[in-house]
Image (cartoon, rainbow, N blue to C red; front, side, top):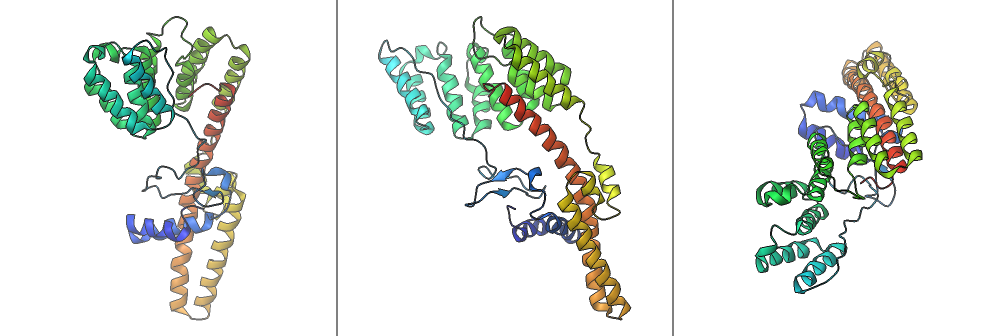
Length: 339
């Protein structure tokens, strides 16, 4: 698992009080290398690892493996020197030279001030540059503070803004922007916001809104197969019986039962074995009047026992998130041009 158990322990002992850190370390040791399908994966090393950071830490960029995405810009028909400059910007973006492209965009605005309110594509390219640099918040700030109002209300600018909010994890503002862009959707526009809207609503458990968004998408692309398959996945997701975190924790009064409830049998077996061995070792130590060793083993046993309970609660949350994420991935496969 990544980070390693020792690195994980360093983090929790740095971030939490001693007793809490003991419990969290015990929980991690119990789960180490078991039931890895419930974790995101990383390719940081030369082999695949399961990513499991403490709740107190944000997973750094680049740790979780994602399929590579390519930020690109559309080419244009060149008519004059301004178009040459704009085309050069697009070439830089397509080469992933985002910092250079940003400099060229500012140069165009400086040299051709008359285009400031007439070239929404330049602003979209500017936002794409920040996206490529993973500076999502900066792109949004640029939109709020420096974009002309006429540009702010452009369909593709709003669409790009919504996409940036989505990348930032701000689903509420992403939904608002996608909805706003849908109200100014140009006729014959091939890139529509309804697929993204459907996924965002589904992820927020607003299934009726999600079905409506897929229907609006269907009215435009007329893809009957994708629409029917998407609705089927949504209904399955809506009828899914999620695991109750509180119940999982309560069941863990018997070590491992909470993990078994959340369909993580390897964790369940590890929790039962570790707690059983420590309990037996503690009992025999006190029985043989080795009170010092018994006290140490008892403290360890208590840490692993409480860790088994809190870990089972978290395993229910991981289970629920895995079910939802798998459904979202299926919807993306059915609708492959959703960003």
